[in-house]
Length: 373
Image 1 (cartoon, rainbow, N blue to C red):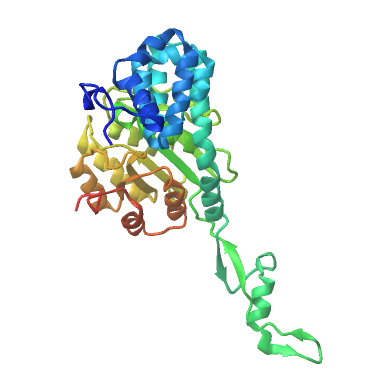
Image 2 (tube, helix red, strand yellow; image 1 turned 180 degrees about the vertical axis):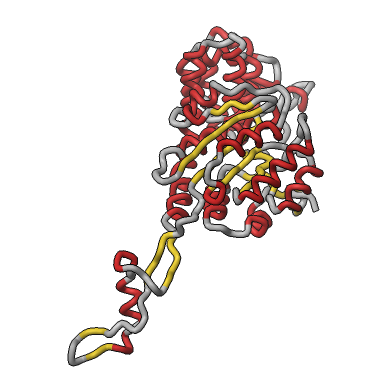
C-alpha cells in the first residue's frame, strides 16, 4: 500500500476508515506539514502521538517520533509535560538532550526529567537479567574432595556413599567426601572504559545504565570512565545514571592509549579484574602505545574485552586493523546488543572462551561476524 500526497498527486484515490486515518497521520509529518502548524496546540500533538501507537508497531513509532521531534524541536516537547509523558523511551534522545542542555537551548530541569524517564524504562528491562547473570557467576563454586567442615555438601556426600550403608548402625560410612569451594580468584573488579566520541553515543548511554545496575551488587566493584583525548572517571555518579550521563561530553577526538594508561594505573588486582572497553578503535593518539597498553593489561592477568558498540543498531563502523591486532593478542573485539550484555559478562566471569561465545552471539552482517577474518 502506498499512502501520502505524492502517491496520489491528482487526488483520484478515495480512502476510508483506517487507511484514511493512517494517511492523515503520516501526512501530518511528511506531507503538508500540519504537525509544524500544531506548535500552539499540544492536545493535537498528543493525539497524534496516540494515533501513531494505534496504527504502527513500536519500531516505526520510534522512527516517526524522532522525525516529529526534529520538526517541532526538542524545546517544544520539554515545555509540555504531557508530551514528555507520551514519548517512547529512545536512547538517541538522551544524547540530543545532553548536548542541547550544555549549549543552553533547553532547561536542565526539563531535560533531566525526560532523561530520567528514558533511563528508568531501559533500566527496568535490563536490571534483572544483568543482576542474575553476575550473581550466578559470583556464587559459582567448584567441587573438590577434601572439603573443610563448612564446605561439606551433605546431600552429594550421602548419595556418593549409599553403597556403604550400615543397617545395624542405620548410617552411611563416608568413604568419599564431597564439598564445594568458592573460587577465590574469580573476577570481582569490573572496569568500564567508554569512548565518548559522537559515533559512540548510544553505547555510552547503555554503558552508563549497565554500570548503575552493577554498582549495587555486593562483592563486586564497578568503575566507569569516559574518554576522548582526556579521561573522566565518573564512578562516583554510578548510583545516579542521569547525573552520570549529564556529565558526559560527546564529540571531540579519541585517545584510546591515554584511557588504557589510566585504567592500568587504577587496577590493583589484575588477576581479579575484568576490563570492558567500548570503542570503535579509531585511534587519534599513538597507535603503538595503544597496542602496547592492551598487551600489557593481558600479560598482567586482566581479562579484556573490546566492544565495538553496545547498541541495537547492528554492525558499527570500526578500525578493522586494530580489531585484528586485538584478536591476535587474545582480546575479542565485536559488537554486542544490550540484551546480550548480561550473558557476555557472565561468560567472562565464568572464564568461558569468549571467542566461542562471540561466534554464537555477536552482531552479524550477511551471515558473517563483525570481527574481520
